[in-house]
Image 1 (tube, rainbow, N blue to C red):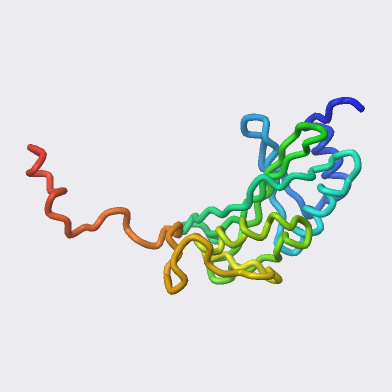
Image 2: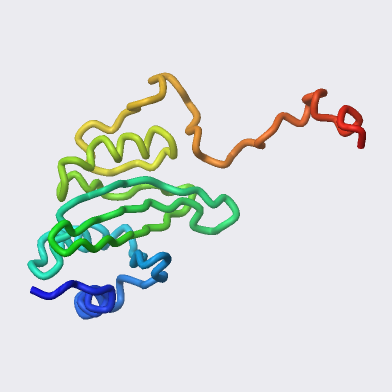
Length: 167
């Protein structure tokens, strides 16, 4: 079997998911795709089980928060085909008032803790997850620390005034 190229990968994905997967680019040679929450499990399952692709290793699940955008949350999946030594990144963007997405534990058991961590830090709710609760922060914490909902610095700090720095 020849080496799987990004062009071959994109052609196979386009043939299978013509209208539901969008190519965002190839930064540093990493194919980056976007899909919707309705299709994510179908796309992940196909990428894992397709004999020519075999994306059998879920490297990471995480999230991003862009509060200025309409769809302010993104759930990011990094997959690796150990057979073909090719990686792919999948993104699903969600509105800030509806951060529900189906769990990937139905495809990979290892998604369990990754989804718990993403919930813990971003508040993304993975529907159908077997045990969605905090994993690193204290259980009674009400905030999600990776959300960009608070100013980076306290505006009332007196040690940050310009006159302390000769300005």
